[in-house]
Length: 429
Ligand SMILES: NC(=O)N[C@@H](CC(=O)O)C(=O)O
Ligand SMILES: [Zn+2]
Ligand SMILES: [Zn+2]
Picture 1 (tube, rainbow, N blue to C red):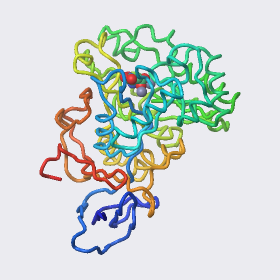
Picture 2 (cartoon, protein in one colour):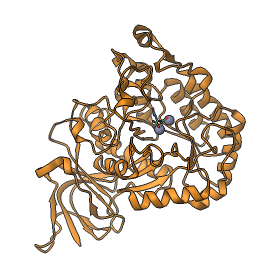
Picture 3 (spheres, rainbow, N blue to C red):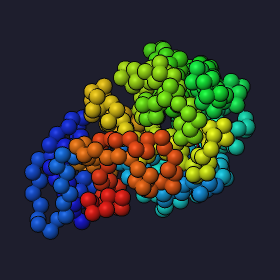
Picture 4 (tube, rainbow, N blue to C red):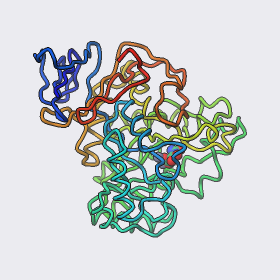
C-alpha cells in the first residue's frame, strides 16, 4: 500500500530540501518535489515539518526480562518510535543477563517480535557484568551480537579489559564501555564539587571516569580493537579521546542529551530526577562536551534511556536509582537548545542522531534512500510543546525535563513503512 508524505523539508543526500516522500510497502519509492499519486493514496501533510531519517539510538535500556515493572521491549521500543527513533541498540543489564548464545538468540527473537522499532542487542563483555569471566565471543557473534558492553558497570580490571578487547578484535566487533572505576566512586550520588558539598551529598570524582578512559585508550592501542565510550561526561575524558583520535587509535564516543544541557550547578536541591550515571558534571565539563560535538571528538548522541519506577525515583538522591528516560525528549531538547540557538545546524544535529551512530556500528539505518527502508521520523519545528508526564508511552516518567517548553516535537514515525500510532497526539494526528 503506497503512502505519500507531502510538502515537508526532507533531509536527503546530506541536504535539507523541499520534497515529497513516497512509501511503497516497507521501502521508499521516491523522494522528489511534487510527486503525483492517485486520489486514493493516503497522504500526510508535512508542511512546516521536518521529514528525517528514522533516528538511531545506540544506547537504551528496555529492562525486559527482569525488570518489566520499569519498562518492557514493547513499551521501550514504542517510546523510541515516539521520539523519532526507528533503530535502537539495547543494553544487556537484564535478568537473566543474555550471556550465552542461546539466551542472546532468545532475546533477539523477542526483540524482533515484540519491538516496535529495529532493535540491535548488545552482548555482555563478562558473564555477570561484574566478574572477570568473559563470554563466548564467537558464539555470541554467531548468535547475532553486534557489539559487547557491560553498561551499568565499569570493567574493573585492566587484565579483563585487555582480554576482552583482544577477543572483540578477533571477531571484529566493538567493545562499548561504561567507564567507571569503582574505587573512585566512594558512594557518591552526584558530581563531586561545590554543589555536592553545598547539599551535603556524597560526590563522585570526575577521575572515576577519565582514569579508566586513559587505561582503556592504551589497551585499545595495544589490541587494535574498536573501543567506544558510553555517555562521555568529563572534559578530561574528551581531551584524551581527542588526542587518541589524533594518534590514530580506534576510539569513538557518544554523549547523552542531559550532559549537553544540564550541569551540577543546576542541582539546587536533593532531586532524584537529577541523579544519573555518569552524574551531571561541572559547567566546564558540559562546555567540553559541546566543543567535542562541534569538533568531531564526540561521534554521536545517544540517549541512555534508563526508565525506573516512580518509587525508585522518589525521596533522596542518596537512595534513588541512577538514570533518566530519554527516548521521547532527545530530539526536541537538542533541537531547542542547540539548533534554535545556532550552536549546531539542523543538518549537524541530524547527522549526530542518524547516519553517524549507524555508520559507527555498521547498522543498516540512518539515511533516507530511494529503494531503502521506509524508516522515517517527522518533527514539528514551529509549534511549542510543554513536556508533560502524560506525553510518555515509556513506563518510565523519570525525567528532569517535565514542564520544559520545546520545539521539534515528533508528529509521526514510520517503521518499515508502517505508521506507528501516536495516541498522545489525539485528534491532531
Ligand atoms: N545511566 C544510568 O544512570 N543508569 C543506567 C545504567 C548506565 O547507563 O550506566 C541504568 O541501567 O539504569
Ligand atoms: Zn552506563
Ligand atoms: Zn546505560
